[in-house]
Length: 174
Length: 174
DNA sequence: CGGCTTGGCGAACACTGTTCGCCGAACCGG
DNA sequence: CCGGTTCGGCGAACAGTGTTCGCCAAGCCG
Image 1 (spheres, chains in turn blue, orange, green, red):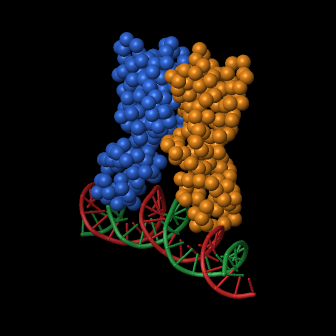
Image 2: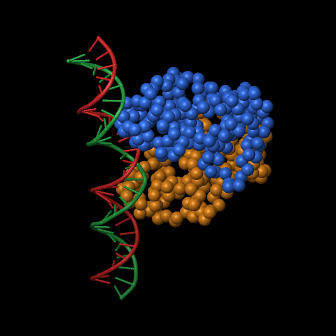
Image 3: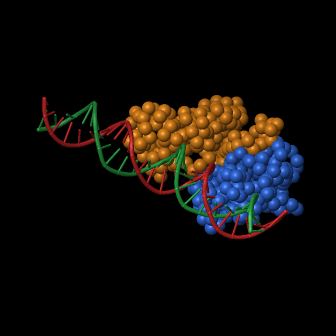
């Protein structure tokens, strides 16, 4: 439960930033140790002087992304007339703006050992506040939002489906 | 939109069945062309005499799995006192019994071109019926169920979280 | 100045999906 | 019964993956 991110060299941070760019531009297949190395002007083996392995690289990207995600949710909920609706808009907006990053963060087990302490809780807080502090409601609402986003990103809804309506229905009275 | 599954040889069907076993036993990393071949007593290149490529193999597994999933949902909803609750139990039950299969089916774009015609609609029907025919309600409820299942499978809820309670809250009044 | 650390590098390894050419057996028409 | 075709195996090979190894040049520091 320690949760510690290893502090990185400047090159290390550069690699993490480039990895995120690669991921967002071309999806997970585009994030290759060789192409990442090329992006910063070195060769693949040199990456391992700065990061233990690809898992650690991805964990660093997750940590950055989750922090931004939490920021976006906090900003949306904060002082909003309808916090829950605002949360939904922010949640969906982040996922559509950063689909590959969203999946890296939310579609696999969290690398909790490699995340800054408290980050996960910070990311969960805005929704918990928006539903009035009830964990069951927060979980149900999170599941709905996550499900909507994942199904939209994987193109599972029919072509003309009115997803705004589904969001409205799903968030109604929560 | 044609949707046609290529009819397979006996060996082909054997390969698809073995692929499903491999997937369910060891997850996607375990489903390798070489290990699959070994499972049926041949070598990897021979697979390509029966299946075009790994994508087609996976599509065949998806088709089989989605059919079973649809069966399970139909059976649960059919004649149930509370169809929606029954749907939830069946949905979660299938996902927990076949986590890797569930993800192969529902956590990526459907290979619609390689699926039997009507299968996707058949899989969607039970939930649509359970919510009384409203597509928006059906989509919202599907998103909730999918989100709950994915977050549970990826271990995103806190250790002691009462997921039954979250399911109850999420399904209440839908 | 000498030695240690830092951060590059090429070569290599085990693994992945996939393609190629070969080849034996089975089948089937003349 | 013989000859040709098809079927379904096979080994070798290729490009790409993450990763490890040993080497080595530059910089820093006592």
